[in-house]
Picture 1 (tube, rainbow, N blue to C red):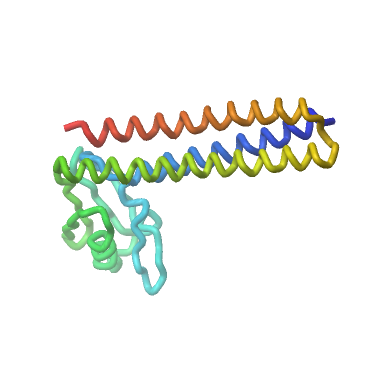
Picture 2: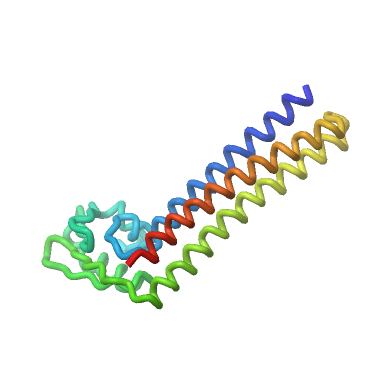
Length: 189
């Protein structure tokens, strides 16, 4: 029975850590590199008839070329709102509008801007690592509660803690790998 309880906790921890890793991947995808990527605009919220709406729910976003994003809104009347939202975002991009499509030319990143983006990526990765460590802390607390209540023995608790640490190291390593990949993309000239 004690093995089943610990396995259930570890399985829960693994699922929660995987979600943290996936969230980190998504957030790192929104950090701008020198290339056009629809993921750049995922954090942009457009004021659409008084409602804050994610841009990717209002338009089709495509990377037409290596340095060009095209945004085709489903509702053409939203073009000015989409342009304004992009201008107001922290991406430093300037959209142009031809009446049907918004085009965004992705400029080359300066060395200074690349370093800012690397710092931003590192902060996002650290948020992911913190989320993973918070899951570990929660599960460690639950393991201690199980031992206090007598549901598991001290050896089982120790084994569970060791397995939990291995899971934590694995998932933190995945976030670190994502960060290394993003840094390579950012620093590539």
